Image 1 (spheres, one colour):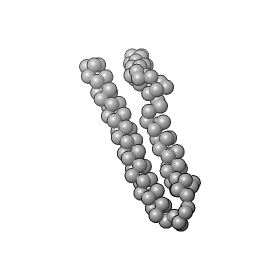
Image 2: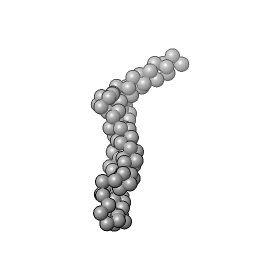
Image 3: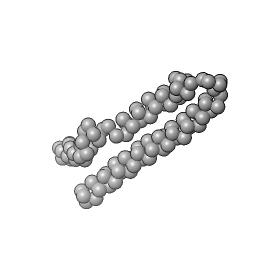
Image 4: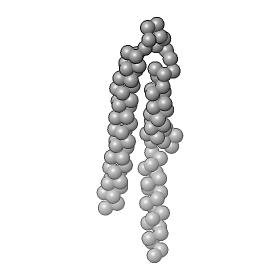
Length: 105
């Protein structure tokens, strides 16, 4: 019985991770497509002889890139800092505490 509950918890955590990854990859794809379109639109509106390398050309990509970086950090960093097995250890610890609390009631 306990193993089934643990498997269910692992499954639910895996589903959450997959949704976070899917959300990030979707965000990254939209970022690339939209910014290519914005850069092309900016280039088409240049005056003759105007330089491509201007802040206004890459302004959207820059500021949106900050948001994309924050999304990436939220998606990937916890696993690098806390380790791969941290979640599983924490879940077991919390479940054990819950068992001990219920044991005395």
